[in-house]
Image (cartoon, each protein chain N blue to C red):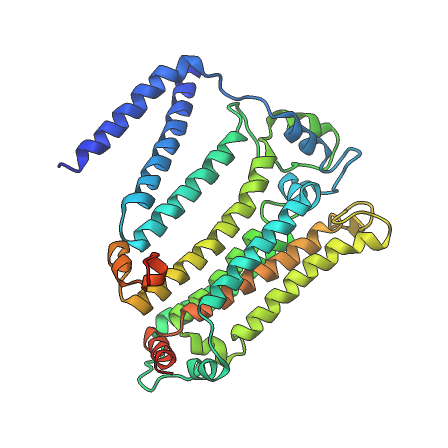
Length: 137
Length: 256
């Protein structure tokens, strides 16, 4: 029984790693800036999920890190079942800040589209001013 | 069909690798010592934050300075977005004017449903934020939920409906600044009584009128709720400026 659980655990971890590899491919190889942004959000969310997974416990029953009652008797039971709260606390801020940074990137892409009429990285390379491309003036 | 082949290869690789490493890994059944310290101390114990919600007590007490700086990253990201879409005073006034061919938003059914749902979202987000020290949730999550309400109004009515009722970009920015200022002030208050920055207990009272407020956690959650919700509202208001109007602004700048 525990072998099956360990197998599923391994499958989950490897699937997340594969998702990270695929999203990195998307960031590097897709020419469309919007698709790059989508791949970046997938990358960030997968990284957050892995961090949450670091604090998980493969036991039954497992509880969220919130005291069920304010009595000292319940504390021992609570500590033996609750998951690690530290990764969750780190991820909460990462999610909201990731959203704000994504908004910033989305704004930049919209502005690029307004100024150059395209979001294709290859087209942009031709249209950008020479000073941005690093050519000799 | 040809697209399925890489997918099948990835799946087979994952399952084969998982089968290979299963006997070699030991599943994690214990909490790390640091996590155990937080679990034991968050309400009871010598280093108590007087909050049964361990995640919130880590967020705003044990690792409060972390969160303070993450809030400043959030502040910078929003400032960056606003700078990219900056308008001068004349353009701002023009962006607030309704275009002549404005149709008035979506149908009556959607507008009525939106009215009910917006009220519910406001109540739920306030509940998430203000009960952040007791139940799952907190300022960040409540603020994100709060930002959905103006987004819904923008989609169902228009950005002009929001601005006519007084919630324009400047007011959203003022609300956000109040939130950030509140966080900084609450962080500095313990210095007055000889504590250190972002100290929670025993500077702030753990209970007010018999209700558990967990010292400073409720104030941080409230101010973060304001900052995140109003920050995203300002960004959404800028995003809702019609493309046609914005292109006109850009062309004028080019001609000058």
